[in-house]
Image (tube, rainbow, N blue to C red; front, side, top):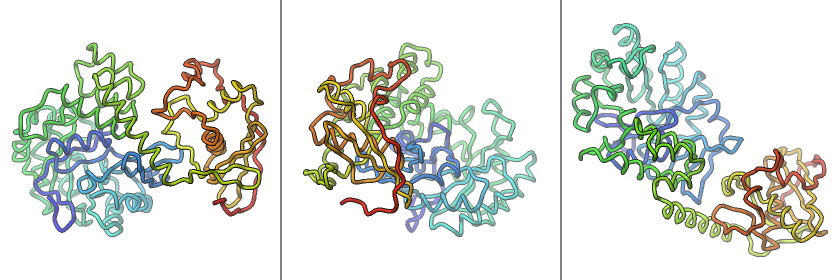
Length: 462
């Protein structure tokens, strides 16, 4: 499938881009069952352009993280030579910015051109000349065959490596039959690979049907959406596996790669289809976390084991990257600590644990004093507990995160639990508070704070 290190789109079967479905667990599952290429869900360039590329050493992934800490796109080494990054864009320059941001971590870039506009070919030209990996696009057919053929011939001249064609008109839905004759006309009109899409409802129900769809459309390759969403084992040359087995394998990937629980639920419900109101379906729908979803499928031990492994990895990385002995900066105890929100359960924060411990020890509430440096508007907070001061030597992007980092330094120095995922329940924060049922207020809100002070550029404390 690889030619001189570049992805080729001839004679392949691909997982189509599907919103909310084409996240990492589903892509890896499709590869396991035999897909040659996997497309991510369509990601909008405006959101991606704001992301920061982060190496996630715990999950062994590359994450593209938005300013609000949401992971917009997550990938890993297993799919690096097979994954196509699909974006939605209306701006050539922004499209190129995003393509260059992700090009080292994906095999190709795809532009969703469902409703082609005049600027669409300009975007493709910009990408083809601006990145080192193949560029493709995906279209729907136009009202006439002539218009469709004219469009794809214009697209071919941009230098794209392939064109995926969904054989339905803009206003048509999956219940409408796919227009194989349009795809066939496109395949005959261009010399680059054409990927046929849209056969899931009536034409592709088994793996053997994939080749029939390919022949019927005259396309070089086939792309599957709903047929793969319902049962990803359709990519396998063997018989379709029971959907229960496929769901279990999907859930293991979702747990392994810390997939968003609501995304996990959505994908499982798509697989359940008409069984979504069954006892299992109702249990999945009621679940709020991956832990609760795991319970529905009898995977509690797998979930717990994975959590323990990941916590051990965090601890190991923390030990190797940070000094065992805190450093004194004047009268302040400092450690190089970052607050990672994903390491804590919903409603739980280090500040909450520090406040509860202070109350238990009959101490005054923690007092936070925060400064912001003018250089990059980053924040650093110092917390005073029992007349002693603690802070992280690292600067945070928000005042809230800076306060949490200071609380972590204090808790770790004193050997107090901080509430991280996988940490044994210390009893410091009762169940009522953990669930956030505190009359609309958070416990940590009781901590004393001082106003932010703007400070000039400073040298970070080592």
